[in-house]
Amino acid sequence: MLVDEFDVAVIGGGHAGIEAALASARMGAKTVMFVLNADTIGQMSCNPAIGGVAKGIVVREIDALGGEMGKAIDHTGIQFKMLNTRKGKAVWSPRAQADKKAYREYMKRVCENQENLHIKQDEVVDIIVENNRVVGVKTRLGLEYKVKAVVVTTGTFLNGVIYIGDKTFPGGRAWEPNSTGLADFYKRHGFPLMRFKTGTPARLDRRTIDFSVLEPAPGDDPPPKFSFWTEPVGSYWFEKGKPQALCWITYTTPKTHEIIRKNLHRTALYGGLIKGIGPRYCPSIEDKVVKFPDKERHQIFLEPEGWDTIEIYPNGLSTSLPEEIQWEMYRSIPGLEKVELIRPAYAIEYDVVPPTELYPTLETKKIRGLFHAGNFNGTTGYEEAAGQGILAGINAALRAFGKEPIYLRRDESYIGIMVDDLTTKGVTEPYRLFTSRSEYRLYLRQDNAILRLAKLGRELGLLTEEQYKLVKELESEIQAWLEFYKGYKVSVAIGSDVRAYSLSQLLTSERSIWDLKELGVSVPEHPYVAEEVEIQLKYEPYIERERKLNEKLKKLEDTPIPEDIDYDKVPGLTNEAREKLKKFRPLTVGQASRIDGITPATITALLAFLGKLD
Ligand code: FAD
View: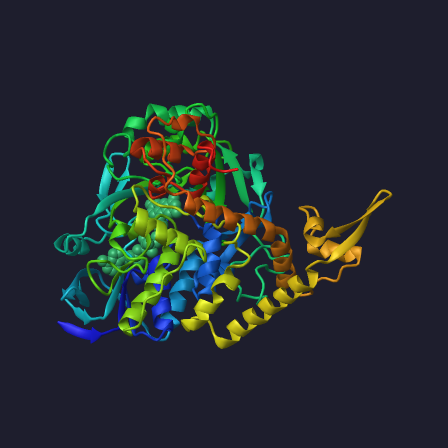
């Protein structure tokens, strides 16, 4: 029965679905979001955290395109850190612990209050297609909605199966039903389906942990924020003194490893129950113990799930061991000797459609108006999901309006890198973003996300005129200062030796732009302008070198790789790269670069080994 009509339907209210639905509605498309349970919109299935290396940069890119994830975590975060600060600013990345419940409630509220966005709690079981074009969706309750475009973001729910040791049952996330109907739709239309898996640790009762023996891990002060638009507006830092929660560090012990080894056959993975492919970079503790047998201990972060809950997330301890063994295993860890589990750890296996079925706009090649985003594309992670979600939502709205879709280039965003990797190389295992996947690492930074993408955000109507005006003003100020500093020299005495130095020479890891004031240099007053000018002054020569190297790499695509190359002898390759190069044995560097998991960093290492780089 036909009940209503929309421009865009978004299937799912996870991290991909939220950004897709909000972007579409904010662009003026009448949008409907379908969810299996309206109370779990924005639920964090696994770790209560947003950001991290490369992922934090994606959150800022989403923010620059008018998305919500950055604002949500700024409002609900309980601890904020800038990662990689021992390295140069070009590779910094923000990460925050979230109050999981507050995050979910924030996202639900935003969706509920969004003009043009309608929420329906029902399972979409079919997508109606006429002449290879989406025309509607059908729900479990038999209702039909006419739509012009659909974004599918079913996450871990499609044919999801949960494993706790040898116990297995259908589910899309702990104690939530899975969805099944859409699998038939995909089979009918000739889409291949793959099985992927992931896992999550148990949640621990904080009252049963001995914190006195644990190492505290505090947040940063001032803490980094994710959105340019939360207070103080026009900056990526909170004011100093923000109240923050503590996390703690502990380690596994030889006893932990012994318990795991002894019960390996009882885990869902090693016991042979799970066939799906798991995330290489979020391995379960049993995976770590098997793959690194000589490692005496693995670091574990104990992270609170919120301000007003006793649940603690033990980051690094996901497992599919039976629950009774989980108790034993967790209790073999310092500080956790008497720990009680609130929710057991589990693994989940689910259906994904290979992302090579998509154009870089995230629209399927087979059916016009059908878009895919999030875990359903074989990625893992909230941020990866949200990054794809906003792009798919934008393009679904554009499709509904009959306008040209957009895509994001590799040299303008990490979202562009991810989508290009996914749609050209496909996935053989859950895809996670890393900075090494980018050949523009020094340019695609956390600090300049707003400068890179605000123009597009404004053109799409996702940033307001006022927001864009502020970005333009700051950008002009940055340019004016860089111009002013061109050729600028400062005389500095080191002992009796007085020499003139350029500002990029003076800006070292120990000396910030603010310290130049002491040397009589006038510096920008606006904190964002000052930081950006400092970073650009410091990194411009390296960015230029990166650009030239990329040009050179493109020209070297046809370089042959000797058939008898011994990849074990190539320095600087990751285990993943070595494994995949040995498996595929590409004949040219260009061919190697198109293998899933082969990053630009691998290509550089390979070319250096072949003597092609100076
Ligand atoms: P989800 O957040 O899964 O959201 C899917 C949404 O689709 C839900 O709202 C659901 O109700 C809805 N839905 C599904 N089917 C239908 C339908 N037919 N009709 C209507 N609504 C539907 N990520 C990591 O980075 N590291 C990890 O270690 C990690 N571990 C995980 C462990 C577990 C056990 C789980 C479940 C997930 C884990 N993840 C992990 C993945 C993380 O949860 C996802 O990356 C992220 O949630 C993906 O967002 P999404 O929007 O694609 O899907």
